[in-house]
Length: 551
Image (cartoon, rainbow, N blue to C red; front, side, top):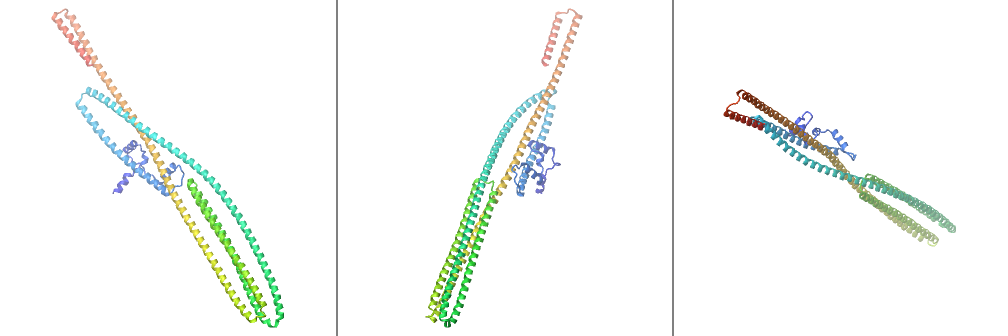
């Protein structure tokens, strides 16, 4: 029941807008249309009229403004209904007072006294009302002037604040454009420097590969030359002991071929792995450059979104971006340094293996020369040495594989840590951007509500001023009517007094004429009659004087 009553209480339409409600609205300076509930379309239209910023409004912002307007409408309905009760009480008091005064005057006063008393009361009440009204109007005028001065000062302050804000925005925009140009120039220089370094690295890599190929070709030619010399010596030794060495030589040749085949395979595998590592390094470098480009693009988008931020925040973000790029540059340099160290280690290992292989071959030649002297002992020692060498070679290969796996794991861990840092930084930036957008939306909503309330308050002040001016004009008009009525009543009283005076004068003249006639008819009478006539004349004259005084 209470909710239905409240709904009916605040549900005011054109049909339920009574004359007393309209009068209450007029006295409070509220337009009757402000008591009607606004639709969603009307709220949107009002927001468009008062929104001087031109921001993109969301549903939550519109809902908050709509709720504020509805609360203000209910407060105004309460004010108007309270004023309506006052109007009802005034009407009842006026009716009772008018009946009481009219009955009292009719019962206690005569017509002339009533007119005179009414004139005096009207004059006194009129004078008091005029003085009170003038005093109230002067007080209201002073208050209006003070409020107007405050409003003008506030508008001037808001205008100055708006101008300063526009000036700061312009300065920030100029500074941001300057920083943007400097940043683009710096990025262009960094890009050119990176391209130059990439070209230099490619050229160095190409030269290094060419040197490696030349070195390998030279080593191969030297190995072939040594192999030819060894074969010549072997053929010479075989010719001396061909029958004895035939079978043994075949076995040695077979073992040698196997060893060479394994060596070639090992060299091919090392070359293949070297190529794969270089390819992987190139791929990682490309991925790193791609990530750097993505990070730069992300920072550019972020800076574009934060265009209207203050210079301190922009410098802070720029400092973070530079630190992050320096960190990425350090990571890239560290990876490049590690790759160079790995390549140096691989080259060193290959060189060591080649030296060892050369030593092995020299030992093999030395043993081959002593082969004639120590046939069986040499064969057994050679077999044992070959097994030990193969074992050492396998151990070295295992160590190299372990080192490579460890380096790959470290690189993968560094990549994961870098990706985690990037993700955390992105989450923080997103949270800051979201909080900034919410604060901006709240600020825009409050500014729109403030503009709407300011316009409504100014409108209400104008309507109240118009109401006071209208009341003053009505009072002055009523006072003029009362003055005119008093003037007419005075004229009527003056006319009545003039009629009474004329009647008394006519009676006096008539009496004098009758007296003259009697005097002519009677002639000269006695002294007593003469004295009597004199006394009669005196009484007549005193009566005329009294009548004039009454007039």
